[in-house]
Length: 466
Ligand code: BGC
Image 1 (cartoon, rainbow, N blue to C red):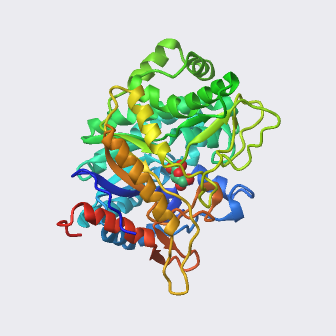
Image 2 (image 1 turned 90 degrees about the vertical axis):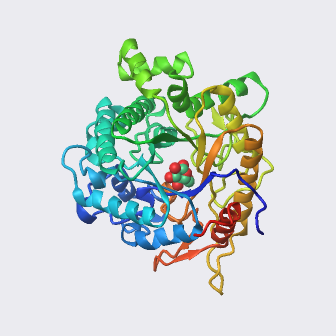
Image 3 (image 1 turned 90 degrees about the horizontal axis):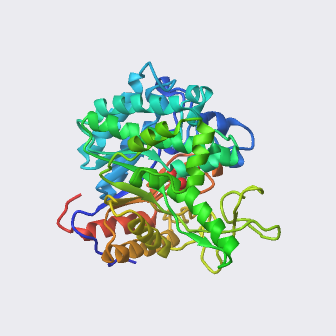
């Protein structure tokens, strides 16, 4: 099924990964321990007890993986630096062998004609920083700023595009508010300081990266439309509060220099103990202008007021604990991925429209993640027929193209992910890759969706030789 989609000249196609999900080699070359190493080793945290220690061994197989990217023809490759590989305890002594790995990776990408787009942080906090308070402490934002300077000074001669943090909202909600992800704090609404200090880390990193000569800087935020369960006031309010806490708490400070409501700003003041003057100063740092804004989109969320008889199973990856002012409600009548996530391509258009309406000064957008888990493996002939992923990507790219025609300024689209990888609490049970990875042999086999995406990219500019 070739795609007839046409994107404007200069539009950038890519794929995304993150360090902890693909690198493995967790004790190689002086790498420090991260919160996810500890969390994944605790019984019951990761489905099937899957271990990321070897993972899919990208650390040793990066050259093969870069070759797969080159054959795919992507312009951009988004990956993340592992903070504990470079600064094993989060600050202080630099592990040169960690920097060497990213030198090798970046040089291989550049040689292959692929633009490297690193994210500085994708959830793998050095354990030593967690022990000193982690994202609940201001000092972690300051350590992150120094880490950003180090990376900027080392790589900005070759790397033009940078993303600061990945999905602060998910890290705050799942890792700090709930206990589904590392560090597993389960603080519920008292996790709000983790939002503020990640946002501050973002703003400080933008300043430091610019000072080091970085040319294009952005952030990768998860966004999704929040659909109220009904038109009842209680459901409308619950959906509004949930959207504020997930989408807008992480976008408003960056794009408007404010928190979305007095309640959230007040909660942050109270829980962090910062003064109103300090909060205002922090928000000025957090709202440093950006060159691009990254949007990760997977599915909408339907939210209503909590009700005892509401069945929220299988809606989010986790149940929202009782006592919080909202509950997840199933979206009816939609197809689902093998992860159970609802497939709603129009949601991508909806969220792009909401962003445009909310932020008059919105920078150009890159869809920094979009993709789906489907478990198809090789057939008897070795071919991976992942027709459902092709349909998913095609439908989302069509929704994107329509929204661009309606005025959305989107300059790139990255598929999550190039390779099947470690899907956090779901371990290796969920497969998001365009390339299948055999978990015993670690052999890589491009799926049908890989060839479909390659042809789509090639069709945008037939003259371009890969
Ligand atoms: C994260 C990825 C993750 C993907 C699929 C995003 O929330 O940035 O790390 O693998 O979604 O769950």
